[in-house]
Structures are given as structure tokens and as C-alpha cells.
Amino acid sequence: MDTVRMRYNFIGRVQGVGFRYTAYYVAKQLDLTGFVMNEDDGSVTMEVQGNPFAVKDMVNRIKESRWIHIDSSNPRRIPTVKGERSFRVISTGY
Image (cartoon, rainbow, N blue to C red; front, side, top):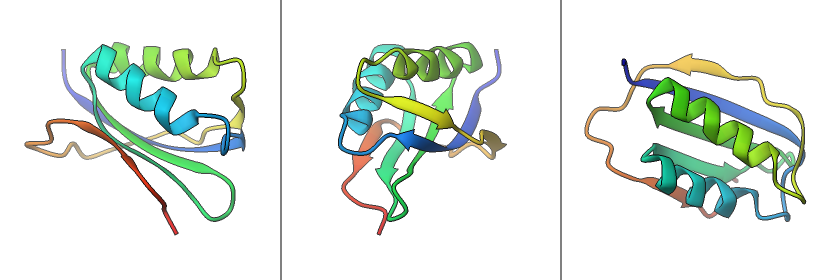
């Protein structure tokens, strides 16, 4: 299976509800790489790389969180990052 990298901009109740740390723990469980960060407009940006089925599973697991409510996510496929080895939480996007 090919490796994909997807970029999402999540809009909704996504800041102050544990979104970034939920994404981090799910990415670790699914062996995905990338990053997640808050944006100054209240959205959250996430780039995630790995098996396409695992990437889809990650987004579904985040949506299942009790506190997170995603109104839209605007996914798009972007070029993979060679040599990336981990998923990280970036403190701030602004």
C-alpha cells in the first residue's frame, strides 16, 4: 500500500478540547507521522502521513471524541515528507 500525506484544516469545537493530544495518541497507535497545531482563527491544522486506511481511521477516531465536534475538515492530499519519523504537537500555529 502506498504512503499518503493528507493536510486537514478542522473547523468546529476543536480548540481547548484535547484535539491535539488526541491526534497525537491516535497517530502513535496507528504508526503515523506528521503534526497537529492550533491556528489563530480557532481551527486546527493537521498533516498526517502513512497508510491511507490508517489515516482515515485516525480522523474517524478523532471524530468519536466526546468533546471534539468537527464541522468541516477540508482534506487534501499533499506530497509526502521523506525521512519523517514521528507525529508531533506544535504548540502554536500563530
